[in-house]
Length: 114
Image (tube, rainbow, N blue to C red; front, top):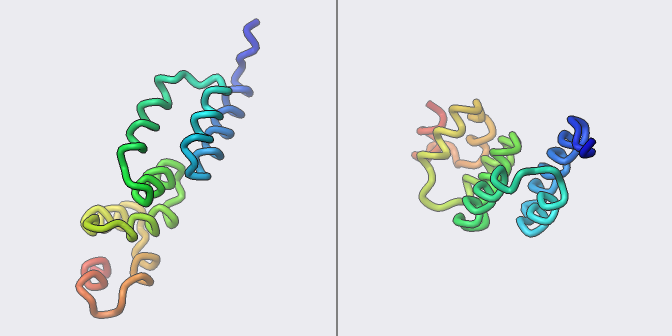
C-alpha cells in the first residue's frame, strides 16, 4: 500500500484550496508540494495566476473557489474589465451586489441593471 487513498486526496485538495484562499501563491506552492497533487495539475494554474496583476489574480482565485461575491469585488477593482464584469454578474446572477457599487443613473448602473 502506497498510503494514498481517497481520504488523503480529498484532505489534500481541501488544504490546497484553503491555502489558495489566502491568495499567497508561495504558501499554495508549499502546500501543493506536500500533498499528493500531481505538479501538472497545479503548476499550469499557478503559472497562469502569476501572469496577472495582484487584484485580478485575487479575482481568478476567488472565482476558482466559487467565492463569487468576493471575486466580483476584486474584478470591479480592475481597470478596463467592465465587459468581463457584466458577463460575470449575469453568469452568477449578482446584479444586486454589483448595483451596490455604482451610483444610480451612471452608465455602469444602467448597463448592469438591464
